[in-house]
Image 1 (cartoon, rainbow, N blue to C red):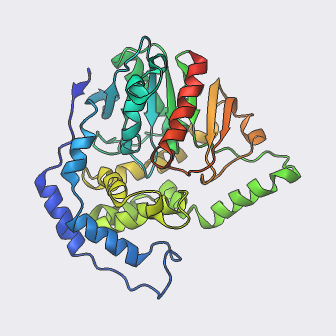
Image 2 (cartoon, rainbow, N blue to C red):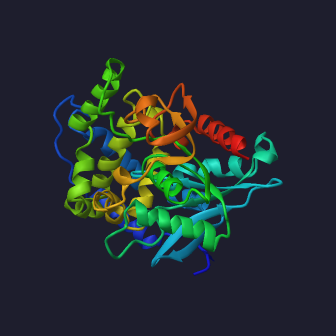
Amino acid sequence: MAPRPFSIEVPDAVLVDLRERLGRTRWPEPIDGSGWTYGADVAYLRGLCEYWRAGYDWRHWEARLNEPPGFLCEVDGVDLHFWHVRGAGPDPTPLLLLHGWPGSQFEFLELVGPLADLAAHGGDPADAFDVVVPALPGFGFGGAPREGGWGISRIAAAFDTLMTRELGYPRYGAQGGDWGGMVAAKLAATYPERVAGIHVNFLPVPPPPDPEPEDADALEALRRWGSTGNAYHRLQRTRPDMVTIAQSDSPAGLAAWIVEKFRRWSDCDGDVERAFSRDTLLTNLMFYWAPGSTASAARIYYEDAHDPDGVARRPRVEVPVAYAAFPHEIVRPPRRWVEPHYAIARWTEMPRGGHFAALEQPELLLEDVRAHFRALR
């Protein structure tokens, strides 16, 4: 089905209900001085949720989110929501920007202009991109799958169909972090004749069967994440709706689940608002709360676990791959772990930043993306 124009328009009744639910939140009694020790800082979340209830202006952000031309396009039975901005240059490269969980399209809002219209942002128009920013199926304001089986294989197939059949691009690139990076890799491995190259800022690869002494730090980081940092992953991979029912009912519960990840995974030195404003945190949360996509988004973990051709089972990516290694990423594999799985053409050690690179360090990410695809032109 051909793409059709679409704008985000949250009904007033949804906003009224949100404020009422926030006002009725039954907060637990925290341990004195515990902060984030038990997973969520109750005092911080209470303040953030009070701002969400009484100070946050969704209509301002809704208008901002509707500035890039938005569309819906039905592919494989699901309405894909995406922004599509044509590049201002002699031969723009089509580029997919792919988010993950617990992120959203919002991560890329400020990157669209600098990628599409470089002349207006101090760059060379020859580096321009046709920018396509889709929501992952089941995330945000697009459609949600009504059946199982939407692992990254099916997601990648849907995005390839969107780019080639619906938007008419015979060849394109992709950039992503978190699940977006994994979908980009799946696209590159499955459709190398159409994917010119990918840029990723998240590379989950297993350790080699023959670790060397210099791998000790990376192995310890992986062990530490496995023992103290991935409870959410295990739960959403096995029993996601044990928590998504609660998060779909309580905006405060949703905020606690997601904001903790923004704090833990970012370069913020323990203070989440050093990396993200309250408006940034809440606008991202609205992509889950307003359309009711909390459950359909979290299920991507379950679907990948049951995808026979999922993350752990795809072939090596042979198209040119750029990796932006941000120092506060969840895990940072050494290059020798990565090269059996990815054809690395560019490896950039970034001076700062974490998992949400497009929000935390947009300029660093932008320059690395431009440089990688400039070399492929």
